[in-house]
Length: 155
Image (cartoon, one colour):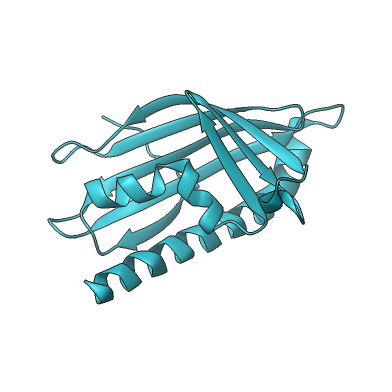
């Protein structure tokens, strides 16, 4: 059985779980949905750089993650991707779970438990980041959902 985070942002998608997984679990797609961000994947390491000119190659806030688990959905079993944030500034964990909800629908659950490295308490910096990251996740899933709907209308 897969553990699903209770603080996840959840969005229903009008596509099967395999299609939703291919879209949201491939972090290279996230740069289309997260403003001012570029994403590079090298094996099991992901680098997301955010800043005013990051999409043009300029430096910015770097979020370095390792891919800990990357299991696509299979039958009725959800797909689960988990990441550990190992950068100099951002620490913590993230997960994306894609749950089958029928032959042509699925639910995506995206959770971020992130805090700042450094002298301030993890609990404090995590609480400060939580509203921002929650908004970012909701926005990204909204954009991904719109992308799926637009593709579905054009088919």
